[in-house]
Image 1 (cartoon, protein in one colour):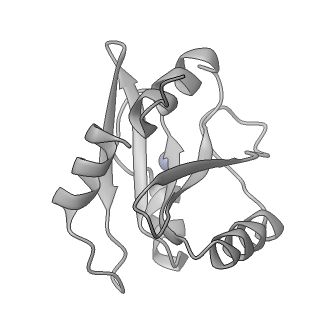
Image 2 (cartoon, rainbow, N blue to C red):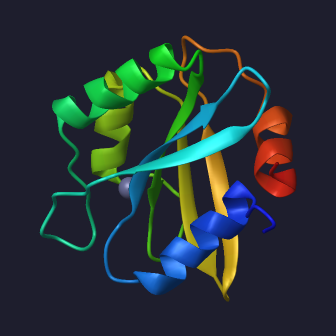
Length: 133
Ligand SMILES: [Zn+2]
């Protein structure tokens, strides 16, 4: 069976669950394969997200056990890839790069927000999302 690219996978998830914001992490393994690991969005509001420290710790453990890099935290919006006020606050406190994704006219759009401590090139992440595995 052909493997879905990360972009295809995300599109599929967004189409199947249009009401909630989707949350998860993009990992890159040593052999350059990528993996999207979803984490539960506990927010009851469909225009926000809340993830637990336990889930983040579990992702970190998984990544380190598998020699993978946590490339970015991903969450979805219903219409745009701009950060909300809450996003801006949370992003400042976050240690991760962020990617905000949305379905626009049935097509996946995304915006990469590099964390200040990181120097990952935007072109790289665009390439990864576009080309997948
Ligand atoms: Zn947001």
